Length: 226
Image (cartoon, rainbow, N blue to C red):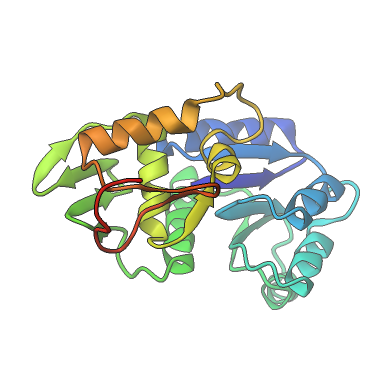
């Protein structure tokens, strides 16, 4: 899961990144509203946004209103020191999916983010099940036909993305950004290697190559990979 953190306080941003690292999210950070607005208007593939309201440039409320006006439905968790009821109502009315007041407990932030991601995917439970695979995001566990499977962090991230949207075709560039974000150097064949490992550990026909486009995990087997 790829998360965009928009927070101008360097120490708080560093603390959030450190806290979310064990969750194995791909976390990208921006420190001003104008940059966030540009990234979200460019249709970067984020699964959720953690958005401060008191930002330099465009403030968080303006960012939120602008992306909602354009039809961008990415889940947004607002972080703010504005604790008045009118501020909370304004944020929710502008399109925020959840709202947390600073200071906050890290455990609550993690729980709210997990819940936000589940709701955005129409899941009542955190468990994902498809094609004999059972994936538990909370405990970072995967089983296939009842047997535990060990995956690397990026293999897990990739599988979770495919299982969250079976039938969706992903381009290679989209997968790179979802798995690596902006900050990491990526080998030219990195995605192909991860998909090869998933096929080997789970099933050869699990992830299908769509020639000239990318990759898809079908809801039901479609035969051998092309």
